[in-house]
Image 1 (cartoon, rainbow, N blue to C red):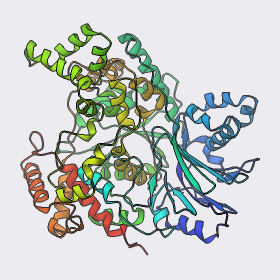
Image 2: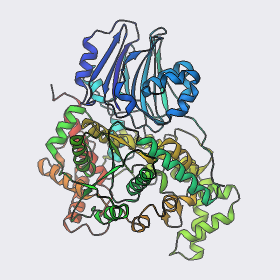
Image 3: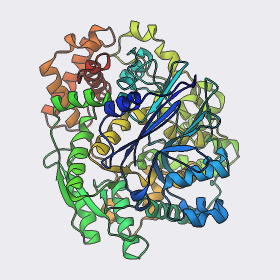
Length: 633
């Protein structure tokens, strides 16, 4: 893994050496293995190198091919053997080549449609000097950022925002519409950023620059197979096969691999199955487990992580949480122009990654994605009704509300299956649940500002992809969620700064394809979520973890960070208030309710759901300190 950047002059003028030098100097620190700059005529490409696979240890990029094309690649391919087969005789010369060489060879020999064959985590740019054409693409899962800007003459791209903002000396104009999406916690715009002149290449999309014009298109347009007629046993078998494949692929590493063991179902599944694969000889190294402990806190999961250790006969390395440091968060915003990492994630990320760095480890597996793909819902009920599967629909519905009367259950079945078919509002609410369409503008967002930036109109934007049934449409919403990118870009950058690449087995594209088309009752079975994972890992997981129904509640670190922030600057004096974006009275009231709850032992659920919005207000405040002027210069 690494980071990339580049600049191209559409009018053909030469790129002066000072420009890529300035971009490289402005970039947030990534790439422990050095920075390389390639420059020729109107184009310059920059690579911040960080080798994490055996093939990447000897790679050289940016580097021209025999045709003259130059690739700048950030990422990893996870199906190398299948891709080598596409190259025929040429594959013999590329068997041990870095992933970037495979990508460039396939694009040149097969064409840009070869993107549909790639499985992995990547973003790249290819400069073709003969046609003066820049081609850029991003993987469907979208874990590697790709930002770009174009003023009609100068085109720039980068992994990190500061590379563009400070490196190119862009005018710093805020995009208040997207900021409104953030503060309301309903983020829907996949191509916008907090600056008007910086855009995000959407996941599963590609971009071309030629003849002075930028064009983007969605290349990832596959129709997902419907597996709803597969038996339960076939679902379990297919899941195990694909989960194993993901783990084997994602443990390809030039250094020892570590897995985060929280004690939750997903991270425990990764550790337990990876250990089984090693012991059966299918993975070449034991995956070390690392746990973060929170003694005395409600988010402590020592009971369950300890059960995994005993079950496997291993001893996890223990990492302590770190308290939220407001000054360090401000420094982070200044040096990256990213949002600060959320307090409930920052401490464990810093602690685990710093410890890995001292051991020379570079790859960390997580359980991220399990909640997205495995939790399930009733979105498949309208599909059952439409296909005449009345028996299955009735059987599922009567088992999912154990406290209701039979008549109440029948009403619920009818409402959730027929309602989305008759009402466009119900349909939209079903397939895009993250928008919470029935909720009003959040109390802490100023209503006059929300009207001015047309916030409600933003939420009415149609889904980016149309799929043939309700269930697939809703599950795809997790894949296309702009909220996920805003949350995880700072986390990935934080880990990369410490030399650690995060990998997520549950987000392997082959596994995701299956889960998008899986039977609904294999995900949500009655009241049991993640049913297919629980069934597939019988005997692999300790029963105490496999049958666990609770989740850790990580509100305490956020409340503590808010308390620290408001002790230094009361809401009335914050920029987000002075600019008319946030209501300080509502923010103070909602925070105080959560603070009182924290002070009295955090028993039960939090008194309100405003924590994410309150944190984003504080995060935006720290970001604003450097968004309009560069405090590091």
